[in-house]
Image (cartoon, rainbow, N blue to C red; front, side):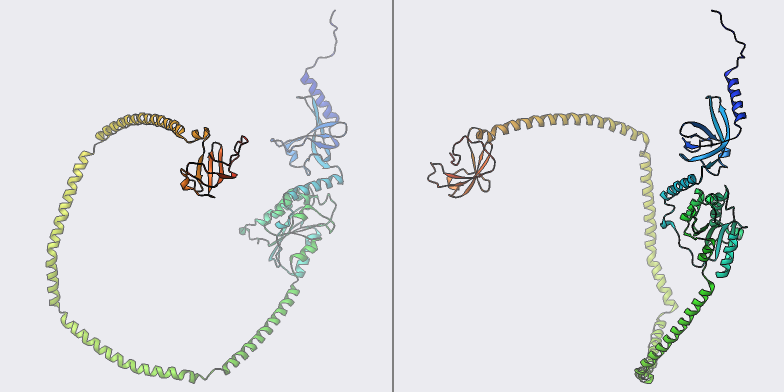
Amino acid sequence: MPESKSNALEVTVTELSGKLKRTVEDTFGHVRVRGEISGFRGPHSSGHCYFSLKDEKARLEAVIWRGQAAKLKHMPEEGLEVIASGKLTTYPGSSKYQIVIDNIEPAGAGALMALLEERRKKLAAEGLFEDGRKQLLPYMPKVIGVITSPTGAVIRDILHRIADRFPVHVVVWPVRVQGETSGKEVANGVHQLNNLPESIGIPRPDLIIVARGGGSLEDLWGFNDEALVRSVSNSMIPVISAVGHETDWTLVDHAADWRAPTPTAAAEKAVPVRAELEAYIADLGARLRGAISRLGDNRRNSVRSAARGLPAPDMLLALPRRRFDEASGRLDRELTNRVGRLRDRFNQTGARLSVRSLELRIGRARDALQPFKMRHQNSLSNMLDRRKERFTQRAQRLRLQPIADRLVTGRSSLHRNEKAVLAQMQTLFAKAYQQLDRNGRLLNTLSYKNTLERGFAVLRNNKGKLIKSTSTVKAGQAVSIDLLDGSIDAVVGAIDTPDKASAVKKTSPKTSSKSDGGNQGQLF
């Protein structure tokens, strides 16, 4: 059958995929799609984000390029319903179409609240909201850092309130308090105030106030930023959160060390009232002066009362003064006598110490030391000669080759001795095993248990000794009878003659023995 020819233009797969791609991109240049995020596992190692948008009946592949992902106000999260804006395109490599997203926003306030609650639970599980992490606010800070917009009414209210109550140095860190970058700017402000270098001349704050006026949930969304919450929670400087009105709550309120309902309330919490402090200090000063005055009067009266009970100073010093006068008189006489005696001894000793006598004594000592000096030098010289000779002889004997030969000979001898010792030990062990086996067989042959198997019994007294004669037992004495399969405790009855067996009374057997129905109370 002849082939049917068509005048339709043939195209390659690549050309057809390119035409489809251009058609889709021209027709759907910009779209807004509402759907639930599915399959999102975080950014790829390349920085791009791949996931899907789905509803009850369909599924659409989505991608966010790395450069655009860094600019998004809301990052994709698994299960979040969003409105995605972008353009449709195709991926020829797998014949799929997808949306390239430029922007993502939650689908309504309900989605924002769900996202906020999920983020709150996540950060609370990490312990960022625990009371144990919160710091105490300083009672009288010297420097206060305020992170807010420099052009709004909030900063003017805070500065005015601080100036009225207690003027201190205020460092304003300007940020945007609304918009996509507001959370990151406030977080950076908290970090920078915690790490202010001394070289720039700006004092480090003792307290930080994060403030903003009221607004809707979308307006305050920047203060729910995860990076801001972590920065506030990790701040080494106490932080007061004053975001929105009293009914407005953000995640930074949970992480801050104290939450103020309004920015004005934050300023009032930050500093005390100076006039009240001055009045309080004045009252304390008056009370202190009164207490000191009363204390002085009490001490003065106590000293006067104690002084009336003491004797006069002259009476206290009369006896010591007399003793001192008597001692001073004796001291003069004793000193004079002591000096005279010492002078006489000095003169006597000095007469004996002439230069000539000292020279004679030194000469005699030198002559006496001369023989010792000569003997010492001779003995030292002889000792050095002997040690030098011994050292030379030992050095001549210390050669490496004799030592090496002795090592080889010793090693060979040791190897031979080792083999001989092993062989001797094996022989001794074999003989010992044979002797042990013979002794075991002999012990079994001579054991009295073989005799018990033939119906005999062994009789012992209460001390465990064998009873060989009737003369060693008495009537009523406790005995033990050893049989083949156990022993029996018994009591000796009447003893007639050595030719007749004694009758015993059976008591409690130590082990259960086999019985043939006869009376086992008699010993034969």
